[in-house]
Length: 436
Image (tube, rainbow, N blue to C red; front, side):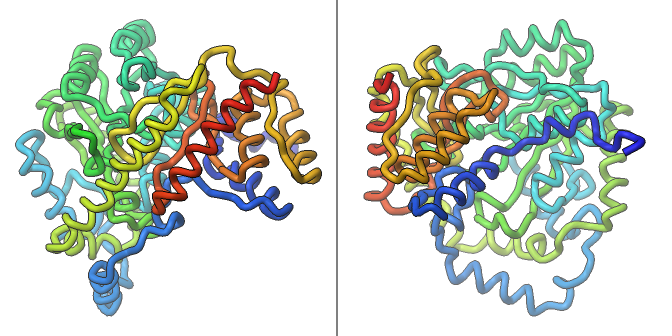
């Protein structure tokens, strides 16, 4: 075309979590039975929505109100309910006006980064959930700026690394926290969160904190809400949603809570620009907003959520016990959300290793996929694992990190199948690393 129409950051928009599905579908068409362990969708993995929850949704769907527009910020009564829950924590105090609903957190994340000045950067963790890192990089038209999550220290943030980046890069305006973390499954202690708040305060930054897994923690850990440690000086955006906890990923319902939104006039103007953008869309989906308070206050909800969390806890320990003794592999016990990130020792993987694949067509397809330039070693392993065993995971290198490994979910409901999958992965790692 006579004028370049491609955004400078278009090349940064990648989402391997779903891209791997295309590979899986190709191999599935060739006869590979695929176990989809790549995406955090509890429904796709067979999570059963209880009847009482369906009844609440069905009843709301009978109301004409659920078919109309909601206010741009979101349903007033739901925002008041959320504000009361946050205020009850005893930290940041907000009103319904400090809450803004979106069509899922993907929508919220695109607004958070999309309405920043292009030269203003938000530093994100590495590894980092792809939606965040890609959106931040795309808005800036450059690779994401990252601070280290240390796999040798429970995947906790390297605070010295974070402060060094902030101190010597004046373009950094904000810090992203994901707690509990995706893709690592780490849950940060209060001291870590307070230290990040302190860095933001001393360098005049704002915080973005993704807390979508806030109520999904186990193994004796506790997820500390940002609202309880933010204080009264640091502006912050807290992201929450229903897709994982309820779970209702197809409802596309998430929201942001604004803490200390009026403390800084520039931050206040930035938040207003996000609200203005939402006005252009009119509003977010009404039905999930209407039912949210009724679901989470239902007497059966705590029991239902606890049953799921206890299953993730049990499965996190099964997975850890199977993988922890593998030579050349670093694995941490997952304590929150439902993901595990496995890291290969530096230099363990190379471009000559492989796994046996019985079907000629499948083997030829995988070999072609991994033969091109720029294929990361862990991506090569993931493709061979998929072709050889049908187990679909995500290369860790696709999460804005130089670490080699893979991310897998803990969502498989059947314990026998889950155990078999992880034992197969362990045996595949042994075979793969010994193949050359």
